[in-house]
Length: 282
Length: 337
Image 1 (tube, one colour):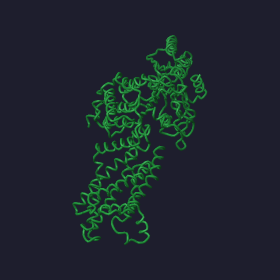
Image 2: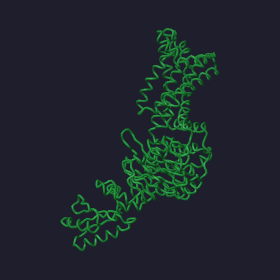
Image 3: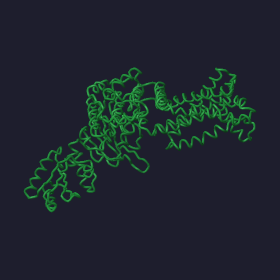
Image 4: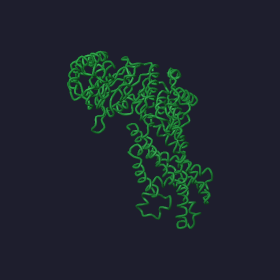
């Protein structure tokens, strides 16, 4: 790398005026890309970034492994008699919790990206406006999928045996990734709204910790006081965790799936337009 | 692309205003930029140059006034404007984490090129800009000159009708600066209109055919290069005398011969005077300076060193915004006349 930084303009090949002129003569323009194509191109950018900075996958590999190991052995004996039995209940829940927690990095990456030079260039392009944001989230969907696979692998090593088989597990992951994609619009909003990376992190923690812990991920809500049950039973995370748990166990929890999809749609409909408004005004 | 407005103007603004809190960053800017030319916007840091460019490139919404780019309103028809302009500035650059090729392919894809065409165009541009060797390296490892090249390359993936270059050479060494100028000339030669903002008078002088000088969000002078120079004085005469005791006398002689303000420098043997003020294209500068020298010699004042230079941006600003307000007004009249 150091050889590159030392490359000064004196070593730089000259600009070729003729070939430049030849390139500029072409005035025809291709038709604008479709919304889908532009979004996929931004998704490709997200993947390129992962390729160049693979360390950023730490949060979707090491963190989820830590979560599974920690909670399985911390609560397993006390709550279900043994870690092996507890993991049958815990794994889908901890999967939901970890992936939803990982979504908050979206806000941080949006926030650091807008400080950089490339953001205004994207905004000056004649493309479908939300495609930049959708691209981020498509890249993140890949990260959520990686995290899910990592956690399932660890879970299976620890003794998790999903009755739903491959189909049930895949359906569960698909629902989780789709929900997380929709949920992430909250973070794109905060990423554009707040002034620094630190404040994005702070606000994200404030939202994510109560939302994920106050759910049925760890224990059955029946043991909780009534006022808390009211919150927990209506939390989107509870619905999602129940739906994923059901799907992976081979059931078809239609109500819980409907609630999860409904919440996801609500997140997109509310936070999508706010994000785009901030994006256009930035 | 072929639909020019009847006025033949690439940019037309009227009373453009942008405020940030209490600050009026852009305070009623009127611009008329003819298509097919390089238009220089000259001003110091914080004058409102970048804010103006950002409004014209649809990145910022004006708080007042109107702006049209090729006849399209920058707010109501933002998308039509975006289809015809490109932007290069320190803020609108490329993705540092990606390689040169990846950046250009990404942007070409976003402009609608199919994958093979995007790759081809990226390769051709990298070659034309002498960046083929660095094509596979992350942009964060590029030198300043390489950065500016890739930034400009990214702006001409589709030949734009209007290219905004916001301080394209700030922070570059003289050699890289010349190379950027060559690129700008090549772009303009193909019919693209360029709006160039700069802090350097010589850069505007080298590239632009018309220049607007802005300060504190206002256009304080506008005209062709010749008109602008004529109003500021075509240049400054710097003199060093052998004997400091002769300076008061030299000052008097110069003032009479040049009919201009003469400044006494901190150095006790040095004087500076503006010449060529009021003459068309500033052509009279050398002649005036010559007369002044002859006059000094006749009076018996020994001049050790003499130079005639272009007015610096500082001097332009002093002339246009100087405390002597009626002087400023007079200058302004000459320019706009």
